[in-house]
Length: 254
Image (cartoon, rainbow, N blue to C red):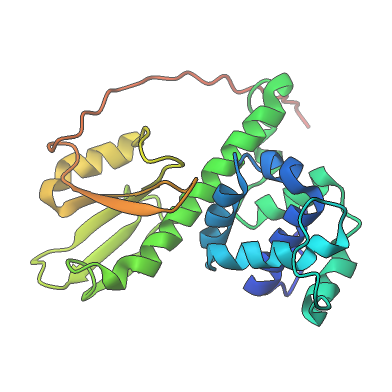
């Protein structure tokens, strides 16, 4: 795993994302698994708890420093704090810089390398890293819009995303007699497939009306959300799929 530099602020990370996109252009977009700049701005912006427009602005900030087709903010000098980031990271190659950005989303290439076919590792790396980034972006999207959603805006929201309890957020108060479990999923397009882990499916079935599926759609253009209460017994139809993974390791006695 690429070590994350110490003392990086959220703004530093967004500036670095803008530098990456300006330097590597569409090659950088594709390396991160995105199909367009719009998708990159949306996913990276929300994943880093910023605004998609901020990522675009930082890319435009650095455009005059690279030989790409965009002029960017060429009528003024690059901001000092952006130049500081530029001088620190301008030497990074595509793979190293992409790995550094992915680490901001919790991706560890060393873990993925322990499973699967080495020949497909690069493809798996891109897909898995994009899934992590999109999931994180969807969670932060929910947090940003929750105060504006009538049925949730007066609730106390507890973030349980790292506890593995079968849902992402616990909502209490706001007129609910008991807590509401809310699971967040993200989709690139306006439609797509959503998968539940066995635990998520079991919890959703057990809680019934107290389980909410919150799906953030259309990261490829302009994100919006749809809410599904009691998704297991509601209008959604889940199909069970089984997948067998072969894990290879080498063991020795010492």
